[in-house]
Length: 99
Image 1 (cartoon, rainbow, N blue to C red):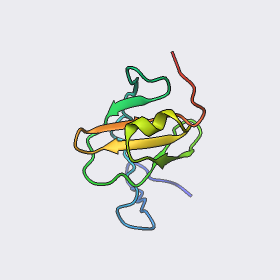
Image 2 (cartoon, rainbow, N blue to C red; image 1 turned 120 degrees about the vertical axis):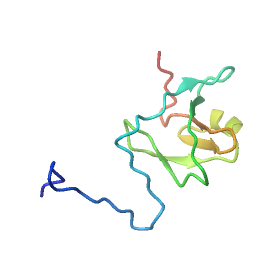
Image 3 (cartoon, rainbow, N blue to C red; image 1 turned 90 degrees about the horizontal axis):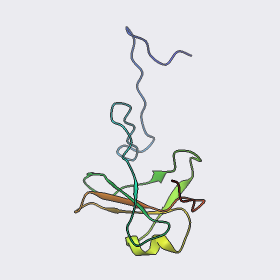
Image 4 (tube, rainbow, N blue to C red; image 1 turned 180 degrees about the vertical axis):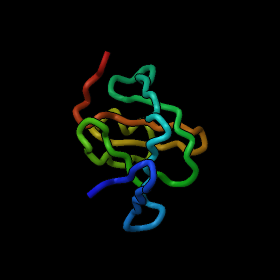
């Protein structure tokens, strides 16, 4: 099966409308360590509404939603999206700190 070509496009749809956003034209956000925390990373991520899910790029792990950013320090693999501030906070599933 061919997935698109210059003269023929490909349509990818979520099973439930509005539950998946795939963007090949926008680079993934750049995460930086959050000052004062060992395992929390933050990136600018302006997204209106509730973020349905976050998958870790290297493991495809589905990260668990947490009610606030502070909770991310205690459990590997959660995320918190602050829509008002346009920030996405996460802790990796393996809690590795990269240089």
